[in-house]
Image (cartoon, rainbow, N blue to C red):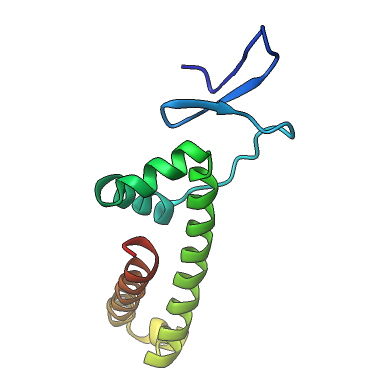
Length: 124
């Protein structure tokens, strides 16, 4: 199916959103990035929040909603990793002295930050 179609009778331009064609914006489509956080939340909506998913899809707000959520979740994740790294005392000096310990501790920090973001943004 084509991403955009134009009704020759009315002259209206339609955009494919999910499985439906919705009237496209006159300013043209503005594609925003939906990253891993947005994709995870989309999966959650489809499985557990079907009415919210259907409403966002029908209104044509789904991609904008997911892009906003992805941006906010990514910002929160980056901030948390930075804060937890400072709190745990993980430095470049540790990285130079003991790389395996540094990797182990950084992985633990990333997992902790990922869990917080998942609970706050993705599965809420």
